[in-house]
Image 1 (cartoon, rainbow, N blue to C red):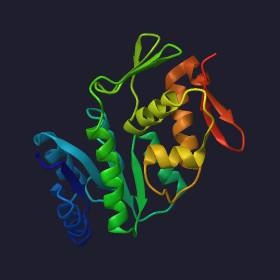
Image 2 (image 1 turned 180 degrees about the vertical axis):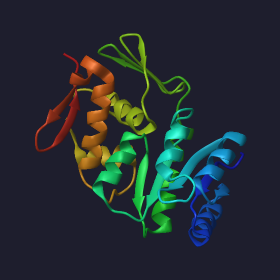
Image 3 (image 1 turned 45 degrees about the horizontal axis):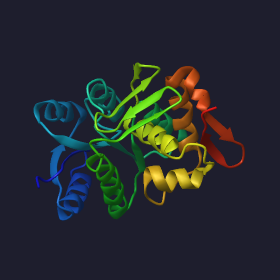
Length: 225
């Protein structure tokens, strides 16, 4: 099987080497870019990039701008790296469609675990998995969502979250259970991550967003009347 291809974007050569070495050891093919402009050149000139690891603070073009440019054309999973631990940065990342957000310094092993979790889910999608409930239709093979027949554009993480809700229709899900199941690792964050994604997901679903019920003090439940 061909190796999965990951683009690592960071202006610090030591950081790129550290990340690259751990990924190569895990049998991934790694491409590197030292700034945002170079990253976009590589991304759009190279076929089959499966995931992007993207630093926020870079010369010529920062990570946010790179993320916006990629998201305009692709739903490829994006992991953002930042030296800041500002909550506003994290929320901005999720608004732009970032799938994971890791603050420096971080453990390379944790980074690899998150990469593996994302790629495992994207590569194991069943070709015939279609979920339907309450006028919502998810086609996992095509990675598409329609609400009352109208297509809805979701980020990778929003798609995973809605799929999980629909697969567990009528079941009360705690935030911890959602994190463990959708993010698929021991998440070193808090409930803001889920709440931010649910808020964005509801807004994209219009009236159907009301099918995702809040269970105060616990989590959420997808319920069709």
